[in-house]
Every structure is written in C-alpha cells, then in structure tokens.
Amino acid sequence: MLSVALALLLAATPSPPSALQPTSLAGDWVVDLSASDSAPYFKGMSLDLEDDGRVTGSFYDSAIEAGRWRTARGRICVSFRTSDGKGPYHTTACLRGGAVEGQTWAEHRNFVFLWSAKPATPADRAAPWW
Image (tube, rainbow, N blue to C red; front, top):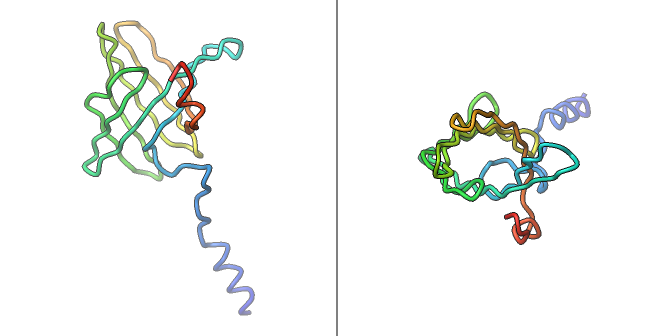
C-alpha cells in the first residue's frame, strides 16, 4: 500500500523544467520569418519582462513600444508594437513547449505574418542577421 501511495505521489509531482526548455518569454529568441524552407530568413528578438507587466526590448531591429505581458490560462504571452518608420507593426506571441508562436500584423503593408522562434544561442547572437 505504501509503495502504491509513493508511486501516485511521484506521478503527481511536476517535473522540473528542462534547461533546454524555457519557462519564460524573457531573453533572446531567433525568429523564423522564412516564407519557404528554401529561403531561410531569421531575425533576433530580445524581450525583457518587467514586474509591472511591461515588455521592453527589440524585434526586427526596432525598439518595442507599448509592450505588455501576462500569464493566464496556463500560458505566458506578450503583445507589443514596433515600427519601420512608415507604420506600426502589432505583434503577439506566446510560449508553447519551449518555443514561441507569434503573429505580426502590419495594416499599412496589408499583411499578417505567422512565425515561430527558438531560444537564441551565442552563435545566433553573433550572426550577421542578428
């Protein structure tokens, strides 16, 4: 009986997060903006999540403006605005399974782009596209 109770207790105990699987959106990310597998296109994204819910950092070589983050319904998400000097880009993204799934809307360019991101490595940060 004791062994059954111990087995049930161990099964119910959450596993610690893997060092390779982030538990926060804070940090540097490699965003895959490729339109096709034959033409890879990457950009860096750096996110700082402040205790008051603000998000700062950069995405696609632009400073993040009016960024917010929140954890709800078992997931953590960010929303922010950037600009290319011609108009705003509105981005939302959520952490899912150690990666980021996001979308960016640019009304002035008439597009919504769906993208994904993985944690950045030192080699990524040294890449010319970073």
